[in-house]
Amino acid sequence: MRLLLMIIAFLMPLTPASAQPAGPIPYDGWTLVIHGGAGTIDRERITAEQDASIRASLSQALETGSAILREGGTALDAIEATLRLLEDDPQFNAGRGGVFTWQGTIEHDASIMDGSTRAAGAVTGTSNTRHPVTLARRVMDSSPHVFLSREGADQFSREQGLEQAENDWFETEYRRGQWEAFRARIESGEEIGVLDIDYKFGTVGAVALDRHGNVAAATSTGGMTGKRWGRIGDSPVIGAGTYADNRGCAVSATGDGEYFIRAGVAHEICAQIRFRFQMLLEAARASVPLDDEGVPEYYVHASEFGLETADMQQIADSVIAEMGDLGGTGGVIVTTPWGNSVYSFNTPGMYRGMAGGDRESSVAIYGDE
Ligand code: ASP
Image (tube, rainbow, N blue to C red; front, side, top):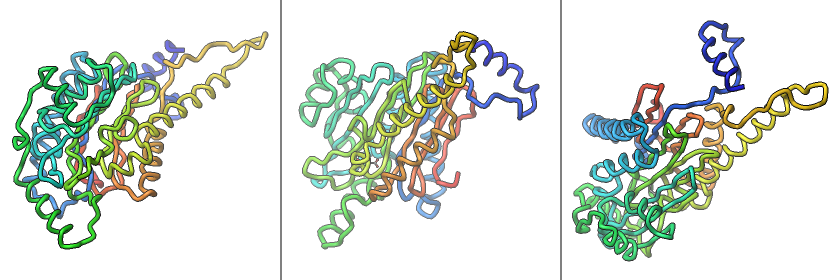
């Protein structure tokens, strides 16, 4: 069957469109998809300079991860390196440039997941770890746990010898201004709700498929401006803001964390993709002709099969719509072990980028791009 598909793929340019195979050809390349947050990102609010600067940062991050994947590096190494760069970039709500808490500090959340083993690591409320995504990875690789919080997480970070920074090193004037405006509005009794997405966008995330066939996902954020009472968003919650499973896909989310947690967005998308794939595989097996003894003439192996990007887009869109029905806004990036990648978001824009073995790498900001 694999040989047959390869022959068909080779002949494809010579055959008329109607004779081309309906199913996807197995993919042996790599993919990388990134986001830098979703929100009310439209042309009126962003200057030409900001637009250019965000695009340059996204392109650089994409190239950093792509270089690792192109050389045969792992999806985990690629997404970690990509997010470290974005964490250091003050334009994004992660690492340096993270939003302020109610008290005026900066507290980070991050997570990472390996689709080949479903191992995961996550941290919430860290104050001094320069690269929260690397700490999440250490939790996964070097601790018996999945999720560490606050001072304990920073302590583990020091014990692991990870780079530390004073909390005010993460500060930017822009985020301080947002915090002051937010507090002034709340203190004057205005009902703006703590879920006002415009006070936080800039969370960063990456998903990748490597040449070994493994997917991985990671997300890193400062959370939301004015967060208090130890509030935790979706970004470090495995299954809500981040999920990876080689049987389905890798997802990283951004948006109103509370709704992403309630809808279990990242796991929901992966589970639906996994079941859709199983369904299609079983249908393909059921359609194999039987020989005289009633035995299928050939065996359709899972590795010979994939998922159409349109199917996957429909799944991601329907889960985002469900989260939207609850009242939330935001988006996701998704990639599968079959090489499909999509974005889905219900906000006017999402900072995003996509690269892969056989496609031009591209970055985008607004919904209509
Ligand atoms: N999802 C993040 C949170 O709720 C924020 C964001 O993605 O903008 O903490």
